[in-house]
Length: 341
Image (cartoon, rainbow, N blue to C red):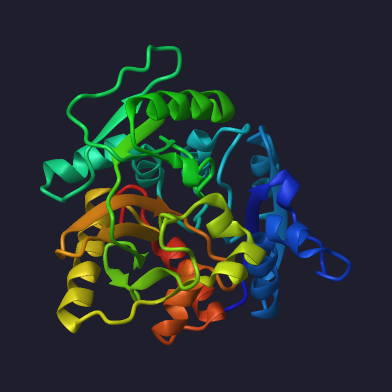
């Protein structure tokens, strides 16, 4: 690939330093993805301009007019402090006729609304956990059609934000308590879904009209006590000391028959198309001991840090990190907003 002028969009608080020297692991963890992407793109020979944003689209416009990038590498997960606004940034780039990496606005919107995504998948006979949504400001009524235990989380937040062991509730009183807690803490609607016991797999996918399913990954808990639920809490996902203590890791799935692995990959591709995703995404599922597959959620523009799930899946498939970023760039340059492919 010839050298490009790449405008890397990120939250204003996550613009990384030039070096990791002098920073703690906790500090680095805040902007790890931004640092890995910017540093690697520069090592690949591209001219890179990190651009921090919060609530002003004019910052993007001025950078486009003055710097004239070939493409925008979109690492934004929110705008104006609202994660639901990220698809507006992709829409703005389309209006400015600037190619960008990652998912299109429609796919971002559908993936962010977990309930809407589940309704679309259920319509197409894709199995998902039964669920109910609790809007802020309305009475919390326990749905009679759902079975306990239930798993409680934000309807729109990602990255396991707000998820803890207390997210699994076994009765009506605890459900009301957890829903109210999350509504107040996160200021978002809350979704309660039937908890599915089983192995948790991640399907990493990349592509536009043509979709490639990378190596199937599994979330493993090697040292966690048997009575502790195996769920991707905030600590499980982001606390490296907790991960080390309990042997928590994301690895290429073992003990899967070829047919089982292919079934998951095929399902991942189908979901990718049903939700109109593009660029790259991760589909999270649970598989019961009886072999039933339940789709938990779809993650558009998931973590692409060096060592993140997309990177692990790509490397297991023979694609090194720079090659992964190059693939993402090529997909962004080749995406046609009018045809949505």
